[in-house]
Image (cartoon, rainbow, N blue to C red; front, side, top):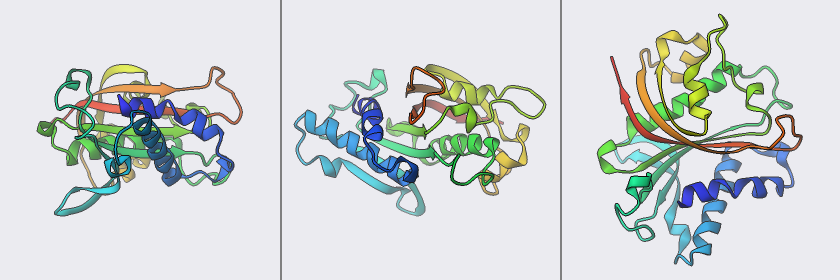
Length: 230
């Protein structure tokens, strides 16, 4: 489970990063690639760099790109670990939320939540389920997640889909764009209707204390199954 092992290397890598205030999404993707390389080197894998591709197109005929593509065809025997959700080829989208102290007011908590589910939407829409590939959304935060995400709507109703996305373990949830505010709808960039049923498995790292300073929260969300429904 190379990808999950790489995730759990991130706290050590991030706490050793000199300029944490200067971290952005691209930095997190690059640091995660470093963690993957560390894991591959520990396994004495030849030419580990060729296993990682950044900004790969989902398909050759569309200029829609995924943040990271990992090809472990020469590392993992096909189907041997598929019962555990481990595959040779994997797509990963990244989100980093670290702007509380540098760009106040630029994004709402609901918009941040929308950006996470939008990545999951993209992964389901642009990958082929029949290919038996791993698809992941990775989110990292430099503060408690409730400071960045709106877990409740303005009417007080809970966004159960968001809670389940970030809840450790395997969870089933549904998302209906029609039931969300414009701050989330605008993240979907002109797509008017999205209703999906999803099963995810989330692996995470969190500090022991919720209000820890100079700490990070990380969530690796694997989409086990996803379908669009009417």
